[in-house]
Figure (cartoon, rainbow, N blue to C red):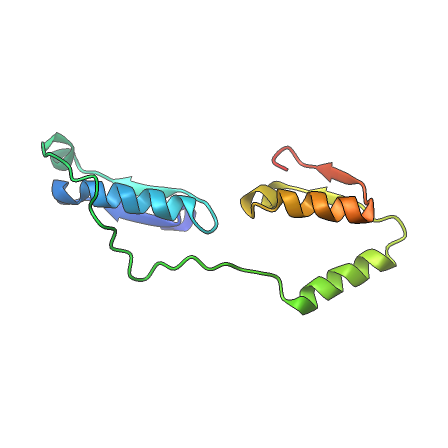
Length: 121
């Protein structure tokens, strides 16, 4: 599971379930979005509690890193576009994952470069 998920949990105490669910949703939907595995053994599934939905998260090592392109990288891409005889943008799921749709529209509006998208783009 570790190789295909952002994080994984094994819930051994039913009292941890609300916190784990909250943390898992937070991890799955922040940064680069991805799956979180929650393993809930049968004994925990059968236990009954009154959950505390406002339980605080405990994620001391989890920090969402906002990755921005370095100025040098942007300059290299701009130079490559200027050198291209017939540039074209082939946009895929990375545009959605990076929440960069507006930036793509702005780039295309300024440059007039034609765009093709993948099924996920």
